Image (cartoon, rainbow, N blue to C red; front, side, top):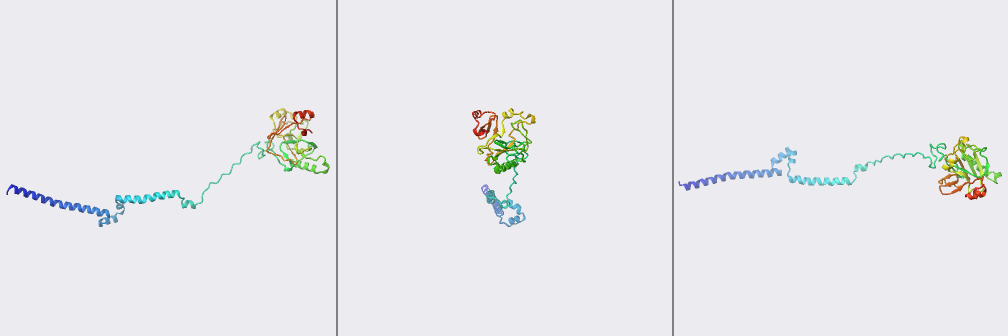
Length: 307
């Protein structure tokens, strides 16, 4: 056999062997690929059997596309539901009665001496500025801390009453008596303290004194003192009643009124050495009985204030 024939035979045999080996390998690869496709799609009996035996584990090995689609279909409604639940009140909370905190009771403010109201525990002894206040009916025309003037009909040192209201009633009874028609009582003054300070140092005025007076023009009432004493007034007269162991109080200790008068309690008064001045700007110059009429008029005393 020649060398060329031998070489041709060897080459032909090698190609035949190679083709025999390649065909089974291609078949094997095809089968494996087909099995993977069938198993992944869940169509093979083996895949069905494995899925039934291990459903939990098979579920977690789903394809990426299934996981993405499942995520998109589940999460979006959840987010929508979250937004809706945040914007709309829940049925449970709407069905429950709304709890409102119990309001705390307002704390009662303590009374302040000088506010014009006599409130407990204030008293005439602890706060003369506010107490006793107006305690009589409107017909009595009471002005707290006042000493109305006028012609004396009943001397309080011998004419007693139990209260300002009682003194007012005595004045009304005097005016109603026909025998007093010439000078009926239209002004009254009451002492409500154990001892009431006054400028007349020769007398000691005590509780219950009820002075009945008559004024010629009650529409233009006269007062000797009214409201608060000024500091200069108190300093000047501090020792006027030293013999009675009594100093000048902060306010006029008397209570008095002009029958039928309308008193504006919002207006306050102060008695000074020169006279009386109101918070509304009214000024009344003090009448001095020891001076002549001309001297009083020169100081600014009103003619109707001289009696």
